[in-house]
Image (cartoon, rainbow, N blue to C red; front, side, top):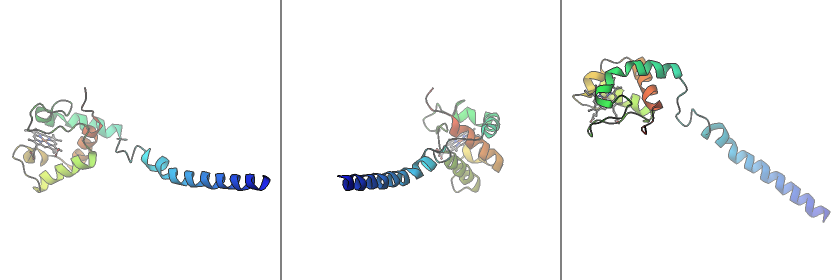
Length: 124
Ligand code: HEC
């Protein structure tokens, strides 16, 4: 009996360590806002909001567009938004409405606008 308890305790300890190691990355990364793509830069959001006047006519005041051919920007991933804007600037992606607007933006503007739009929710 005593010996069994010892083995049981040892197994429990191993299980505990295994579970701890299994869930460690989850606590470190998955629950971390950075890895969920949440925005951490309130100042960039404010700067982006100020610059978004340029975009509202087509993408809506809250990043939700009223025209079915114009995409919503709200809730979109920040990195994706930056990539699309860069593509419009490089003409890897071409659109007669969007490309001229994108070409007026600096790298700082791309960051701020993407931070802002990715922080918005599509539901009102
Ligand atoms: C004159 C209308 C117009 C304005 C102003 C405008 N856009 Fe756009 N935008 C569009 C259209 C139309 C598309 C879709 C282009 C296509 O079909 O490829 C688009 C696409 C985009 C995309 C790609 C979205 C996706 O899901 O792939 C981004 C990002 C974007 N716009 C950002 C902006 C930002 C930021 C501004 C302001 C600086 C802005 N747009 C201003 C019309 C506009």
